[in-house]
Structure formats: C-alpha cells, structure tokens
Length: 229
Image (cartoon, rainbow, N blue to C red; front, side, top):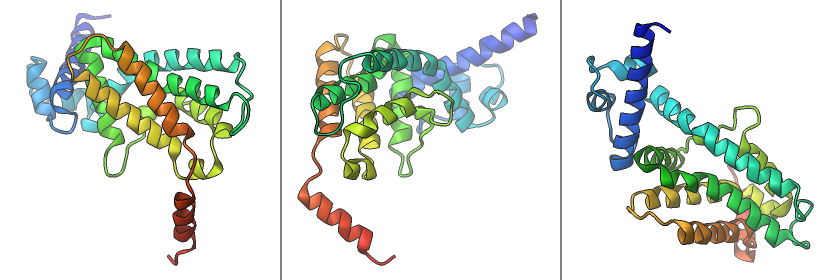
C-alpha cells in the first residue's frame, strides 16, 4: 500500500472516529460534516464529503464499522437458541415465554456490548436510536437488505411466538426501537456497570414482545381496517 493510500485510509478513520465522538455528545442529526472534518483535523474542511459523498454515506460507514461485531454476537446467540430446548415453541404453548425471553436477550445484548466501548460505541448507539426514531424511521441499522442479516433471522424466529395481531401491529419493530433508545440513553449516563441495566432491559423487551393483544386493541384494529380510505 502506498503512502498516499495509507494517509487516505487514516483520514477516513479519523473522520469516522470524530463522527462517533460528536454523535455521542450531540446526536447524529445535530452535527455538520464540516464540524466532523474540523474535529478530525482534516486539512480540507470538505474532507467528509470527499470520503463519504454526503451525510447518509458517512452514517452508513459508521454503522458498518460496528455491524460485523453486532452481527457475530447476535448470530451466536441465535445459534444457541436454535440448538436449545425452546426452539420449537409456539405462541401460547409450552416454553413460549422462555423462548421469547431468550430472543429478547439476542436483541439486547449485542447492542449493549457497545456500552463498554467508550465514545465509539456510544456514537454508534446514538446513531442507531436517531435513525429508528425519525418521523419516518430508517431501517439502515437493521441491515435487512443484506444477505444473512441477524435481525431478519431474529424476526423470523420470533414469528411463531407472537400473536398474529401483534405481528401485524409491528410489535417486533416496537421492541427494536425501544431497546435502541434505552441503550443509547444508557450510553450517556456515564455509568460503567451495566449488568443490572441489561438484565432489566431484556426482561422489559420480553414483556413487550410477549404482551397479549388486548380486546380494546383488537377492536380498534378492526375499526381501522374497516374504515373507508
């Protein structure tokens, strides 16, 4: 690799690190590309545009920096689930609660591992939460368009464990967004022992995923479906 190539790769890495730090502090929507360039010490103030084209390109590159680690952790947990005693459980049947809890852990724990990575992990977590909480949420953090995505596998394993109405009402996405926001908030807390937080969050996510669809919710769902459009 030439010196120029080495320097270019170093500039790109410094830009991503600067973005992670600034996003951790202020959120991904409140930081300009020029600010990232200045924080990275880039000679050219439009260095971020050069390397990533635009904000979406930089955000995707930041997500990609962390994706392999999250994917590896989640796939390992899903492998263990499929080899375990509750893999064949279905909604309302024996072992369903335990299966939902195990899959809630597979959602939470790979993200929560980023809490131990300082500013880079915090910047990633806040970016994920920012994207999922947009008025029109971005699913870029879920990488659903990539072959073998762990989130797609997780969604498929959950499907037989949830009521059809819960699936129709996007219960899985609600759980993903809830967990992302909670973990991002935790990253801003300054605390360094996350064991109780993570265990409680797994319990809460399992409760959200497995909650019975109430008669009132069913009624309102039917009203919406039958209303003229």
